[in-house]
Image 1: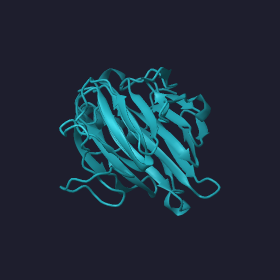
Image 2 (image 1 turned 90 degrees about the vertical axis):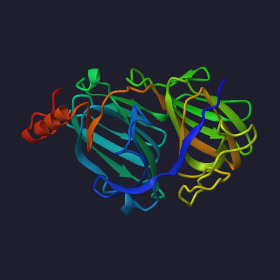
Image 3 (image 1 turned 120 degrees about the horizontal axis):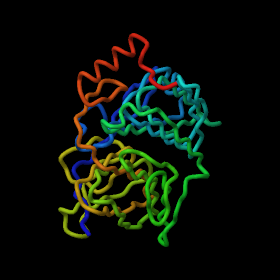
Image 4 (image 1 turned 135 degrees about the vertical axis):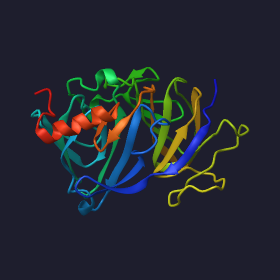
Length: 304
């Protein structure tokens, strides 16, 4: 077994999206090879409704899958195919945009005004770019979880882990999407297939991810809860930190005094060219231009 070296630890950055939603973007709209098959990851949370109520009004998607995971509040959605629904705390929606849809997502806070969720974009391979759109709507009670003897708790959203299989199926990138909670002071080693790209996103507590380049027992650099990455060695990785791993088949995490909770996401890289503008991702500039021409002339929607 080999521990994955850490390529980078960075902080998600404040961003305005949709009609003016305040969120934090961990990665996206830049270099895609490190995260392939994933394109973008957003953390939207807050307790001030004016920061999120404007939502994400009608917009197109083609060539990708969007994965929305809600922890607090509600996100109502609808699309040009007539689908509609609402996601509550603990629910997941895995949307395959395929050949194209128009849709909207509108967040509402809980009784205390809190809203929290994540959205991940996964690329589709060229052979599936123009596939028929589909949804996998998963309610919280249908997501399996498992607790190890040391108290480590994992929700298995997609993929196989510790004998459990997530309810999301048939996704092109064959991803694994886990919500991991490790109790205070516990050191845990978690497997990740060596053929996959992988990253962790910390959203509660703090801890350290051991780098394979460090002697055993020495922990990696830190990005704290309030600072950006710098050149100094630190001790803890905290809230809103993105940890990008290099190759290997396991990671080791040491939870801090409050424990640590993070998403651990991995997928098989597509290794295909990416032509990307806004919410549409194709393989060539010609395909991308054709998509926007169709959006302009009203022929964008291929399946109804």
